[in-house]
Each structure stands twice: as C-alpha cells, then as structure tokens.
Image (cartoon, rainbow, N blue to C red; front, side, top):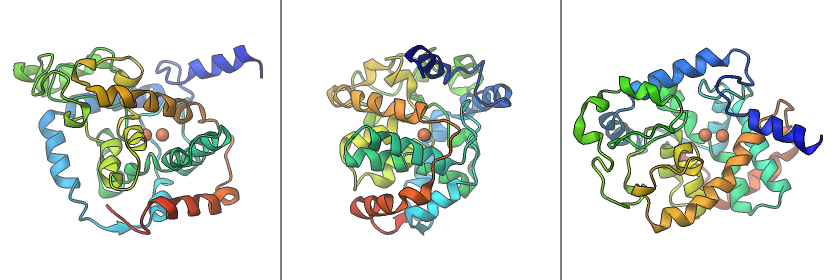
Length: 268
Ligand SMILES: [Fe+2]
Ligand SMILES: [Fe+2]
C-alpha cells in the first residue's frame, strides 16, 4: 500500500460521520447523547464508591478476556470485532514495533475494564471518550452539544474553568467520566509502571491527549506522561483492521507476560 493510501485509511478512523461500521452513525450518536446527558459529577462519585472496593469477585485475567468477547462497543465507529481480537491486534502491533514489554502487556489488557458490562452497567457508563466532570466542558469533546442535556450544565459552580478543582491540581485529582479506563487503572495500580497506568487511565481522554484541552488542570507529571499516552493511541486506533489475528498462535507469549506482571487472579 502506498503512503497516501495508508494515510487515507488512518484519517478515516474516528470519523463519526463516515464510520467503518455501516450501522454506526446513529448508534454512536445516540451513545454520546446518553453518555453526555448522564455522566454527572455525582454519578462519577457514586460509581467510584461502588466499584473501587473491588469486592465483587475474583477472576483470572483470561476469564475476564473471555467475557469481553461477548461485547460489541457501541461507542466505536470503527470496529465490530470481538474485543479479544482488538486487544491481540493492539499488542501485536506494539510487539512488532519493538515497544517495551510492559507496553505490549498494556496493549493486551487496556480494555479489560469493559467487564463492567458483566456487572450490568450500560455502555454509556463503560466505554466512549472520557472527559473531566465537576468543571466546565471543552467543546473539543466529541458531540459536545449533548452536554447541554447534562444536569451539571445547569449548576454554575460546576461550570467554571476550574469547577471543584484548582489550577494545575493534576489529573490524578480530577474525576473523569466513569468507565473502563478509570476502573482498570485502579485495579492494576499496584502492578504496572506509571507510563502504563497513564495509558490505561487516559487512553479515551482524546480532548487532552489529541486536542490538548484541559491543560489548566494538568501538573508536571501529566505533562511528562502525555507523550506515552500519545504513543499508545495509534496502536489502539490503527490496529483495528478486519483481518482477524489468531490468538492461538500467540497465546503462550501472553500467558507468560500476564504471569510476569499480574497476580493469577484479579479482584473485580
Ligand atoms: Fe478503551
Ligand atoms: Fe482499545
């Protein structure tokens, strides 16, 4: 494939008016209408209190990956592949490029938090781009017009530039919209390097890592970690192609990698 054709394919991803999935325009738009209307600051605090105790069940990472295969992500205009294939593609693209081992592992598990759907959470509370709650919205968020439907948009103290936060307080102190990113970050916090944890926690925060919004909430650590999140992103996006990789061929490698970094069972 020539470079121009490759570039056309790349820029075609995340085009919400011309999705790769034929059925997706209405599905994705409806998804963000609901997501932006219902992800309030109070909702995020409630979900954190509910899920970050990790007292639901224990599962091996493989059992969680198996579950993900039953899920099609409504927020994604580009992919209707089983989730495990997306994870294998992401990680294998990293491995082929010689990325560090901890990053390949991160690619392999970065969407594992989508098991929230297993616990009955609707997709608008699990997937999609994320955004800070408790402060004013950036119009660089996808489908930002739907924030008008969010009750927080009628609460003046939650709509100032800093809202409940202070200048350069650091993203670790910001309550992002709730979903698989934040959930998995907390679950894996003891086991992975900071670069990996930023990739997991902020990979859907496009308004930050792609549009460079919300810098007034960021501190020096966020600035230092941002290039790693940006380095992660193309693998997450452009490895989505319909040629299905074979998990069987690479499974022993990932079994070893999981065993090296993570405990045999994870607390969900
Ligand atoms: Fe994700
Ligand atoms: Fe992903």
